[in-house]
Image (cartoon, rainbow, N blue to C red; front, side, top):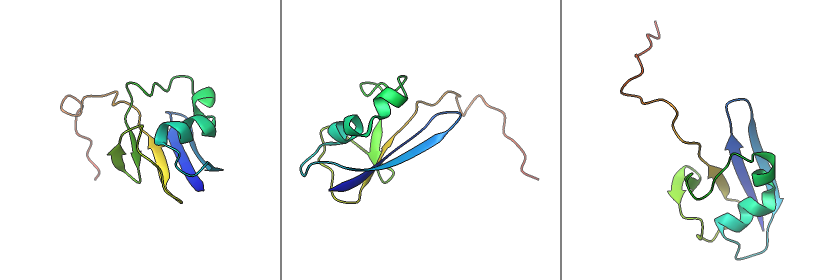
Length: 87
């Protein structure tokens, strides 16, 4: 089945489309994608993952056509960062 895996660091965004065996989990699809080798800073034990913007577990089964997203941790506390005027 075909799925996508997406990740973005501060410098670039990567979205890979790949074929995975039927019944694959989110964790397996991420491993098949090669993202862990391309971005060694990814730590699946601490970072959240999702499917189409909805947080999910690593052992969730993926379905045909889904986009798996690996989320980065927030690096700035939104309550401490000054608001920017968009005027």
